[in-house]
Amino acid sequence: MKNNLIRKMFIILVITVLFVAAGVYCIVYALSFNAVMNDIRQRADGVRDYILEKLTYEDVVFIADDGGKGALARAHVNNMLGQLRSVGNIKRLYIVREDGGGMYTSMGADRDGDGGDLMPEGALAADLRRSLREGVQITGSRIYKTDHGSVYSIFWPVTDSGGEIVGVVCMEFDVDGIGQSYRRMVIYSLSLSAALIALFSIIAFLSMSRSTENVYKKLAYMDLLTGHENRLSYEQRLVECVDLLRDGKTVSLMVFDVNNLKTLNDTYGHKLGDVYLKTTADILMELLGGASPLYRIGGDEFAAILTGRKESEIQVILDRVRDEKRTTVKHHPFSCASGAATYNKLIDRSLRDVFDRADVAMYANKEALKSAPLIPDP
Image (cartoon, rainbow, N blue to C red; front, side, top):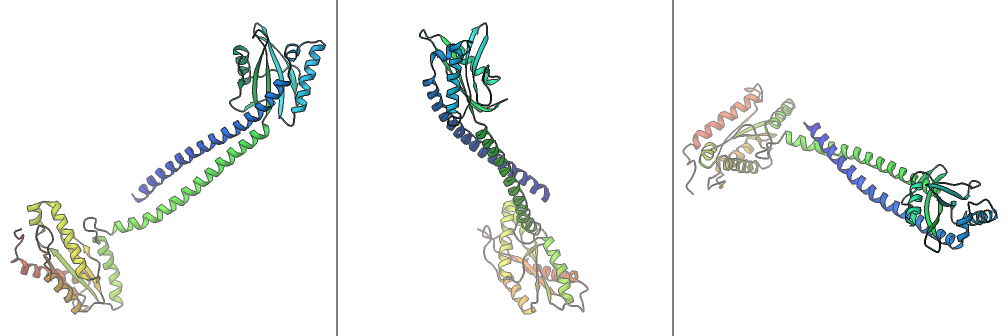
């Protein structure tokens, strides 16, 4: 039962930590991703403005032609790419035109190659078609992985004087370094988070095991109604006292029986009877004066185990119990029969015999108390 409860508590704790960690990680991831993308966009927008300022209408119209104007346009595009290669981090700069019937011609410059006929694929191709069809700038919403590396793209439509789209300027920015750094950050963050969660889980499990050990031990020896020691604790203490007797220590047993509990239960109900029992137990514990814990060994029966006490000291405690008359519940005075006996090796074979003698003394005291009123008038 103990292990199952600890296991359930541990699972709930770990799941809670995982959810919290996942939530925090997602927030940090989103903030980091947005910061990286905003930085890329700002750099890309600056390069875009420069390119669109330097790029001419003729470059767009003639870049794919075979003649001199085409060669001039391609040289112009290559020249811009060379100037922006290190500063602007441009990877590919090309122009795409639609020739009708869904056919495209493209020409430009590639930083890692000779350029020529360049066409995007996948998500980049979809962005390109949308820019051609709608005549709007399409800015990448994320980093795209392509055959030529990680890129961030901008597609900018170019129109003639009549507003007709003549082509789209395509700019792909090299973000390999940023992408790799970002991926490393994600991997390291995940690894660190996993390690911290694992470490936290181990520490939490060990802490819970140790902390609950004392709780379970306390519950195992506690009477839940009165909050005092229970029968198991009493029996264990008796076993310990056997060794004390071998060492010549004095061991005395006191037995108490709460009077009138049944009458109180029948008159006022068991709930008030429980209050009466607990109140009486608390008074008994006070009257013992720290000489022994109070053990509940039956329904309305209690016991105390005293070691190293003289008979005169035992009698003082008995007198306290028999003289006590403070009010408990419903104006009912404290009433508890008591008896005691001390181990005598000449007449006692075991502590069981000591208990029997204390029990006889308790019942003799109980007979003497029968003349007292059960429940006084309020």
